[in-house]
Image (cartoon, helix red, strand yellow):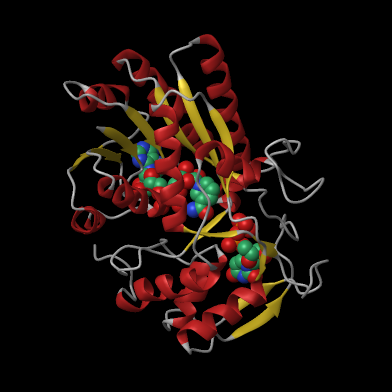
Length: 336
Ligand code: NAD
Ligand code: UDP
């Protein structure tokens, strides 16, 4: 059985479907801070496997001990945490507590229960301002926001733990920009409030929940002047987790790897692709740059391919089509 923390969230829920379809049974721990319980039945139906659920906070050691007791947990996938870069600047205490303390308590509970394998949700934000592109895993690390510092802090903790305990092994996966949804349109990204990220904002404009998209900056040093990112289909990301889990369960050692496609797409290219796929128009206007934004970054994705045998197979149009399947069928997101 695999313990999945934050398994009802955007990335966790899609990964839970992929894990079930690979025949794994799951124990999901989530405190519902940023997700809805309606996800659970939908991901069970899509995955067709066994998913137990415990509503608990990963900072609650007693709850984790109780959840693991009597179950044979082979490995943990740790998605639980807070993820908004801007919010982390305003609320650092919450970010350090959820992301650092949460992981520390989880690792302590794992050690006590004799569980020694962890897949961790890290982020490309650990690299900071690009010294060169694409970012390889050897790129200098310069996390800037409290959020990015918590991600790098956990990576460091995992390195130290693996050095101290030969049984412990981890995969720290540095995600680039996951977007899209399960192709069924049954599960997808459902941010609370006004979305801070480009793609959920775009799909909410398309479905009529928001009036128009603001493109932040048009004079970057990029081919069309708008920001460039490495968007990766959420189901490719889910498959990457399965590959990382196999790597750990086959005792091939710890790894820190980018999960991206290796390709950059600008804001205007993404809008154009979405319009092409859906036949809709996405009203947009140009606004000033967003504070702290980097013009362009994308992954060198070769390590994951070499070491995990995984590479992204879905393109930008797949991401647009599947996200629209979700957003159009669920214009207000999940029911309460
Ligand atoms: P999400 O908010 O949709 O999912 C996180 C889940 O964890 C939610 O269901 C939430 O209720 C739960 N959670 C939060 N704090 C918790 C706690 N203390 N105890 C128990 N449950 C808790 O976010 P997501 O997009 O699915 O991201 C998952 C992970 O991937 C996060 O760690 C995030 O930092 C990381 N990540 C995400 C992105 C992205 O673009 N989505 C990029 C890089 C890294
Ligand atoms: N962006 C935009 N309008 C928005 C949100 C984002 O133009 O409403 C741009 C942003 O400047 C960046 C890209 O879209 O160039 C991706 O931003 P997002 O917040 O989705 O991801 P991140 O910046 O965290 O990689």
